[in-house]
Image (cartoon, rainbow, N blue to C red):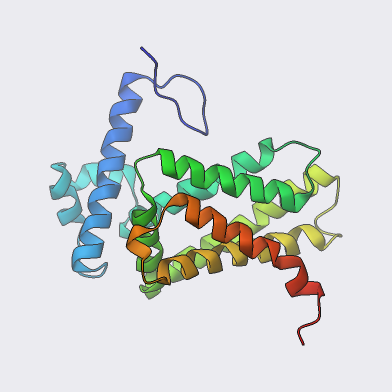
Length: 217
């Protein structure tokens, strides 16, 4: 029988780790359901733990607070993006490598437990909750620094002296965020698929060059 693996670690995962992972995933799922049903502010850690039939103490073994459990799925997606980006073929230019890494992340989401509509609901929750949005934007800035470092390494550049890696990382992150918000705001958002999400992201990236360098008149 095949042993479960993760995108980050292709090594077989032991029974103990699988149990821990199931508990963690259950806490994340319960938190998202409660946040969407009752609101982020009204949901307590005790309620999340009770939903999974574990103690508050167990919750805090996995997450420091509500904010961390709310952003857990995005944090994992961001980490997966960095790993996919590092592994992209050296022949690809920076933008091609980043597009390919984003495509891999969304394809992994499509294969996993987190469905497209659920992911879009999470984006809406974050955008409508000031506390979560502030935390997410802080994480985004940290992510941009790491992305710029990876791009600089791939291209043999000094990120402190060359502006391009940091600039591309910031612009790229903004395009992805705009794509997510545009897709979530569509009238038929509940019926959205991963293929549609990827198509929109690709379309926005196709417009990136002309938007920055072309005439706006």
